[in-house]
Image 1 (spheres, rainbow, N blue to C red):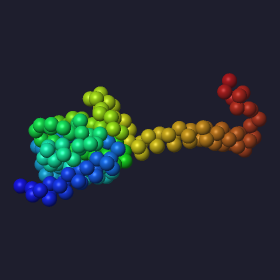
Image 2: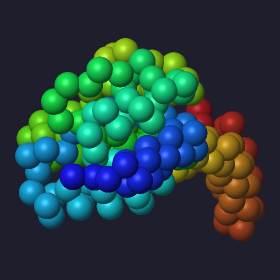
Image 3: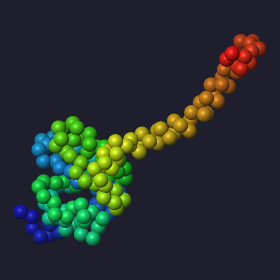
Image 4: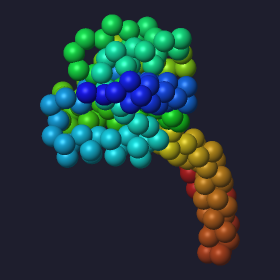
Length: 174
């Protein structure tokens, strides 16, 4: 049984996490072995997130006056709340992958992104987005493509001159 001071500390910690996070997700960790739960927590930490499991009333008290109030009000059953401090799609993807890996024991029940309650479809779309690093990699590859093409053309011209070929690139393609 938690004392009043311990409950207030938990409420302040949750409230602080809500204020710092870009997105908040409602999930569950009940049914997982302790090693699996530690694995989920570790994956969330690596993605710059966190998960808290406590009483529903403490979640409700911590959410009062925040964007999460609607989502965390009148919760029933067992719940956990995951916080995305930087990359919301990475946390959603982490929860989705954990759910797939552990046989539907870590469901993505609800979510709030930038103060807006997400629908089930929006949650699924967010979880299927590539991570920030994957998106940056794609962006950089896109920027790099024209430069690479130019380098290949210049290299082909140099090789043609070294081989003594007088054909132009246009004649060679015909």
